[in-house]
Every structure is written in structure tokens, then in C-alpha cells.
Length: 298
View 1 (cartoon, rainbow, N blue to C red):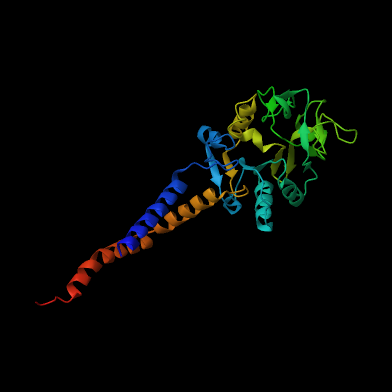
View 2: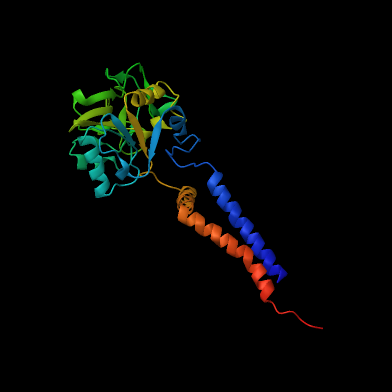
């Protein structure tokens, strides 16, 4: 009996320790607002007033000057695509920051011809550190590029089917798309300048395409004038939403999300009253059992 009780206590302590670890350990998932590490975007959350979005159904019905930053590493279902279409057509600004994700699915649904090429953009000459970090110095005058001299991308791609009037930023003439991954420019591989940021009007709103979501992460936002781009986005938005529902989630993040949902449910008045009642019953059971236990006469 004592061994069973000891094992039960050890198991309970381990479960509690795992729950506490899942609750308090910071997220290390890519592009998460609560991730303080190199690949997160917690700096944006700390510096600007942003609204995390866990469902596109929560987008406002009157989105004038509202901005949604979407990094589509997961595919969108038809209802989500409809929410995005409604958001933009009614006056919202949708910023799709993508490189090798599902941005083209959204663009096709919105009826735009522009696409993300999905091929690595390299620049062996105009870069930061190496060719995988192309430096963008060709910028068109625009509220989003105001006071920006250069940007640095990180394992980016480029845009396709973008008209000259829609382009806000382009790579240098020395850049190229690396089709075969050998980091060497071949005859069949397109060369720069190649568009990397563009603006497209749609209904009452607009769609901004950025061919590198890494420009927003904690380790990149202070390089060159990357922070200036983020600042301009925030300054020109009445409210800035950052979608978190189309990012790849780790087991830690899913566990924490489940714990958050459980806490929200248990904190409702009905569940709180039920827990209090259960605690009272649990406290009275030993007393009741003691009274019912027959006494042994000598």
C-alpha cells in the first residue's frame, strides 16, 4: 500500500511539473508573438499595439484602415479564404508575407494574378553576410517605404506576374532565382531586378505582398531598415492584427493552448462553483467515512 501511494505521489508530481513547464516555458515556434527567441516576433508585440488573431472569423466587419499580417505556412480552408476576401473588399489591408508557404492559394482565391515564385532568391554581390541574405536597395516612394534606404531579406523568394506600377521594392540586378539549389546562376534562371514587395488594390482595400516573412523575426527586425518597414506598417494601420492560426505548431504550443482553453472553461462561474462544491465534498468524505466506520468493542 505504501509503495502504491509513493508511486502515485511521484506520478502526480511529474504531471504537475510537466503542466507547469508547458505553461511557463516560452514558445520557440516560428513567427509566434510569444516567442522571444531569434525566430519569433515577440519584438513586434513588445514595440507595437498588435492584436493576435487565432481565427480569421474574428476579423472586423468594418475593417477600414485595419491591417492583417498573415504568414501562411498552413493551408486555408474555403471559409477562411472567404473571410479574407470580405476583409479586403470592405476596406481592410491584407499583408501576405510568404516565401515557401501557401500564399498562392490565397492570391488565387482573391482573383489576383500575382504569385510567390517559391524559388530561392540569391544575390552574390549586394547582400548581408552571404548570397542568401539579399540586400534590397531599389525602393519606390510609398508610405510603407518612407525613410527606408535598404532592407535585408533572409532565405527569401520573389514575386511573379507583378506590374511595374505595383512594385514597391526590387532586388539588385545581380540577384537570381536558384531553381536547382546549387547556389550558382544558370542560363535558365531569372536574373534581377526581381520584385519582392508589391501593392495591389482589391475592392475597397488592398493586398501587400512581401516575399520574405523572416523580415519580421526578432533576429532580423533590427538589421538595415527592416524595423522601419514594420514601423510604417503599424503607423498606417488603425489596428494591426497578426494571424497566428496559419503557423506550424509544436507539441509545446498545442499543450499550452489546450491548457489555456481549459483554464478559460474552468474560470466560468458554473465551473468555479462546481469546483468549490467538489472541494467541499472531497474535504467532507474522510469525516463522513470516519463517522460511518463501525467501532470495535473490546
